Image (cartoon, one colour):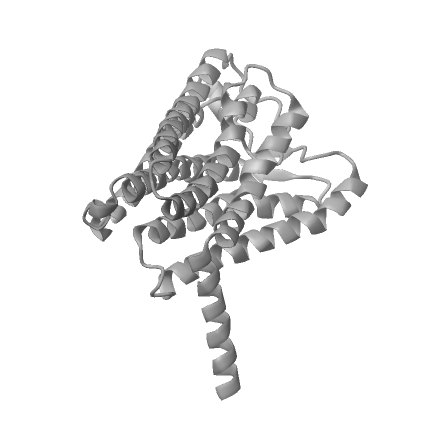
Length: 312
């Protein structure tokens, strides 16, 4: 083990999304625009939730945290992907690779638990509306968000602890655009079959548990909605539909990657792009386009900006 540790590789090489230089040049602009829209969309949402006095409910507090997590999750992998489109030699240091693994699982695990928290918020709002303000007070919201961050951190550290001391002394090419654990452990100079099962079980249990809780929660909520008045049911259904859409977009690729027994390279790359690049962009778009309060907040922000510009 000491000899193996002494020959640890200092860097890994990414194969990226594709081998074609022409295709990489073509993808540079679309992915740059996607990342720019992700940053602007999520940070704008956070800014609105913080500054607009009309967006002070627990739901918007949770949405602000979701937008911040999406911004962070996208920023872990996408800037490196964009820069590597310009390079022939796509390398990342060993420390950088471990940092990517830590951050992806930290923000990804935290988002899973945060989505469960948002489902609980909708459950209380729809099924116990008279007690909503007392149950979902600011202190409880803060604690629920802190718990999601803590669980995400514990999950990330457990993943990192299992691979940090692996001996990497041979191949160092990762067939992806970022360091994902199932691909990295294949490069270790030892049999990692059992370890791979443990790592996938760790991620799979967290993702599947959260997903099942969410399915049960939203099923119960939708059944309850059918018993409400027509107007109230319509508004509740609209909110829940947005939440359910985000849940499916986020959990679908994660569960497929970590629980599907077969590994197909192009499918894995597509799903990795989906949950690290596309989903963080779609989340603010879904909530913004479907939520009247947020659209009104954007109008007020534009109006204030125009008024201050005219006064100046």
